[in-house]
Image (cartoon, rainbow, N blue to C red; front, side, top):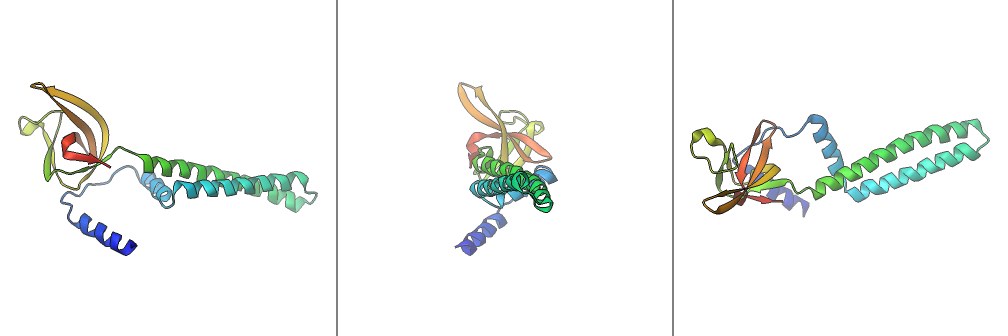
Length: 174
């Protein structure tokens, strides 16, 4: 049930050692929150419904002989068309969030992020320490070869203030 899932999520989140700071901008986070409040199909059906309302307003404006109905059709059609465009945007944003493959979770018990795509050789090359369960956003990837061993590295953003390289073996894309 949803209560069990919510309790499990709260328990798992309480065990995460690293607390990331703010991610993204206020407006971007607000738009993502609104887009995630419903599925993309729901936003699409709402856009379709408001498109039908827009067409109804246009028909009322064109074919009515009463001034009040014409004004209502005209201004109501404009408002419905703007709402339709907003719902289309939210449908695309919701689908984009659902299909995103740039998020990963640290699966190693602990890992040291590097300032460059290779194992840090000294403390100057260490960026930060992350623990299991921390969420990161993958920005780029590069394959590094040393001693004929090829290793994949991800350029990750932990929050707005922290960006570094992590060995791909230490994270799992979700």
